[in-house]
Image 1: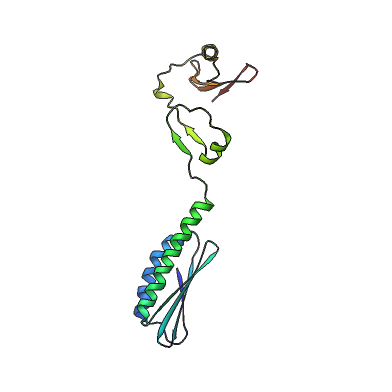
Image 2 (image 1 turned 135 degrees about the vertical axis):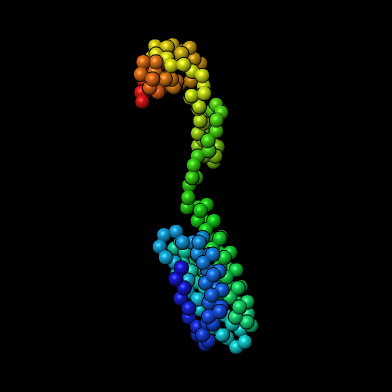
Length: 186
């Protein structure tokens, strides 16, 4: 992190610079994704108060934090605490609002009945994982797969995944609305 110091009336003491840079390095781990970030530190003294202002640009926002105290070190610590809180808040807000769900929810159970359209929009899509290998199914021919599909005419099963007996390839049969079948071979 590039740190730019500006002192209006007094010079920023070197022992405080080291402490400030160490604390800013911890904060910079949260905001540096690509490229180098800058922090602008302004120290000014107004009558008996030391005022420390820290400005950082993050996610197209400028974060400005002030710390005031009669001593320089407590003023610097106040500004750093405010900066830390704002960085954490903005980072969480950016993650929650700008990112979609990283991975959909995965369950290993048969699918429940279809929810209505309103609840489907609120909940998000679910993926149900089928463990094909541990299912205990033996390879079957295309005719056997069609007979299996014909036996489940109740409308619950519109597809069948099976391993072809001839080629040992994974295949899927889909029942079309007109009653015919589609075959997908891998």
